[in-house]
Image 1: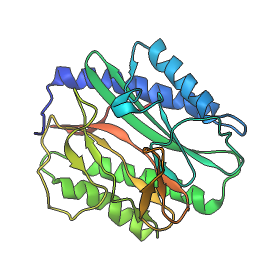
Image 2: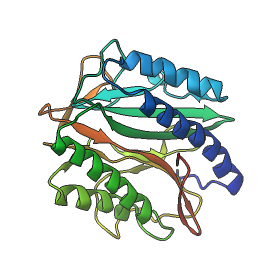
Image 3: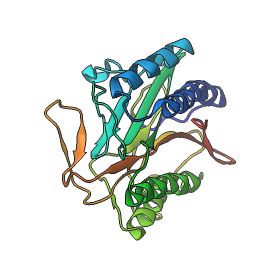
Image 4: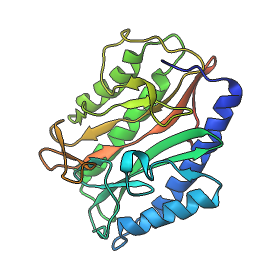
Length: 248
């Protein structure tokens, strides 16, 4: 069931999403050579709790950390650890917050020091794909328009869209209907209505689209070992068009 949120509910989701956005900028400022993803996790937890939120990922279906920190070939759900970031790495930071009964969710991928130009282009194209998808989230459009915006931009650039993972509705639960694929045909799928709130999150691989899950049961990695990028916003569909609730 797709929930249509009232203006009041959207404001509550925005409050959680603002904490997410602030946390991501805080973590981004801490990304450097030598920092561990465990240190980023601790910084994320302190930021979220210090701003009155709850770490939505901690304990979710048994997830053991406050944020997801996915390095290089790790697509999503990387579990923070003692792993130190190295020159040339990229790290995808994914943050979820619950406050006053509503959730916000967003992510970004950050380069560590001097990164290969091809990987930097992957990050740029993925962020551009997110912007195009948000622009397509107009009331009256179809869900396929959103997915097509991502897929067409990514594939034109020579990269691949992860199909085994999708975005999602968000509100009183972290994951709600509808699923928001990063691929699709324009004019197909459920019609977008004012009041829908979605986490739109392109996951894009430098090489092949195929992925696998590591033995920890969480970390999704590219099958070919090449880098991946992940950008995400919590977005409300309003009568006046899409509004990014997780804008910094």
